[in-house]
Length: 417
Ligand SMILES: [Zn+2]
Ligand SMILES: [Zn+2]
Image (cartoon, rainbow, N blue to C red; front, side, top):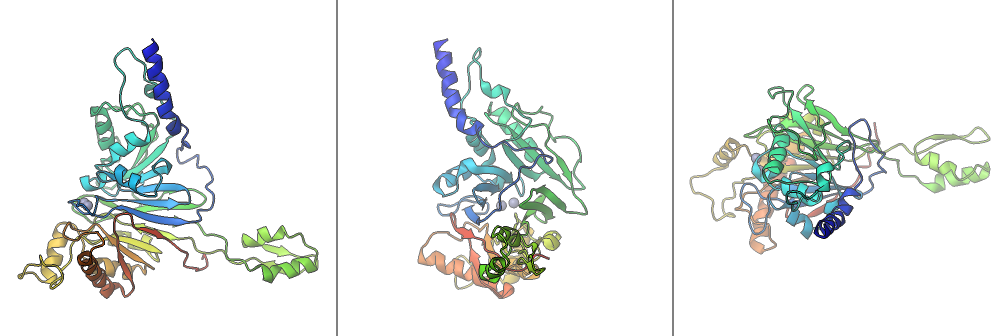
C-alpha cells in the first residue's frame, strides 16, 4: 500500500504540469486568442531522407506569441526542441504534411513526452492515466489519412498510457475513405472521440482551424505519396496610429483620451463639434505557407498568394564546379528529372513557385544529406550556390534554412482589403 501511494504521488508529480496545460476544445468552443504579436519560425530539422550530424529530420516550430504550433515531427524532434529556444510544453497543435517517416517518426515520442507517457503500472496498481478526460483535447493533431491510425497503433503496441488527451483531425482527399479511422484498433484511452475527417472542398481544406486571431487552410501538393501544404493566415490587425494626428483634436473638443482605443481599432469617432476622426485602416495580417515534400505544389497556389513567407523544399540541385559529387554525365535537366521522379524539387522550382505566388520571402529546407548545414566555409559556398539558383527564378533574396535557424515574420504594411 505504501509503495502504491509513493507510485501515485510520483505519478501525480509527473503529471501536474501536463494536466494543467490549457485544455483545447472541439471547433465549436474556441477560446479567444490575444493578438499574435511576434510571429516566429524556428527550423528544428532541415534534412531530407537521411539525417546528418548537421541536419535533423523535418520539423519546424511556428511561434504565435507564446503559443507553439509544430509542422512535421521527424525522428528526434523532441531532442531538437530541447536544444532550441522553443518551449516544448507550449505546443498546442501539430500539423503533419505527410506520413513519410522522416516527417512523422518523432510524433509518438513527442506525444508521450508532452502528455506524461513514460512508464507503466504493474497489474493490480492503479494508473490515473487510464481515466483521462477526453471531452477536451490537450493536444490537437492534423494530418492526412493514416495519421490517426499511426498514432493509435504506435501508442497501443508500446503500451503507452498518457496523462493528457489528444485529438487527431484528418484531411481526407476525395479518393480517401471519407468515414472511419483507417484502423481496426479502438480509440486509445486518451484519444478524444471528436476527431474530424475533413473532406476537401474543391481540392482544398478551408479554415480547418480558425479563431479570432488566426486561421489555417490546407491543400494537397504533389509528392510520391499524399501530401499537404498548410497556409497560416493572421486576421487583420490594427493599423499604426500616429497620436499627434488625433490627440490635439481630442483635447480641443475635451473628448476623453480613451477614444484613442477606438481609433486604434480603426473606428470612426465623432467629436462634440461634429468633426469625425477616422482611425488608421487595419493592416493585412501575416501569411505563412509551409509546404511538405513536393515536385509540384500548384494546387495550393491560389491559397498561398501574397505569402509573407514561403517555406519550400529544395532536396536536390545541379551544382557543377561547386558540389564535388556532381556527375560528369549530369545536366540541370537530368537532375531536375531525377528530383521530380522522387517527388521532390530543385531550388529553381522553389524559386519559380515563390515568384508565381508573389511571396515576400522564400526559405528553402529539406536538403539532401550532400548539403551540410554547419557553418564551415565549404557549407557556406554550397548553400550560397543553392540559394542563388532559387534567386535566379524568384528574383529576390532566398535563404537556405539550417537547424535552429529562427526567423521573425514582419508585416507587409499593406492595408487589409
Ligand atoms: Zn521528406
Ligand atoms: Zn516525403
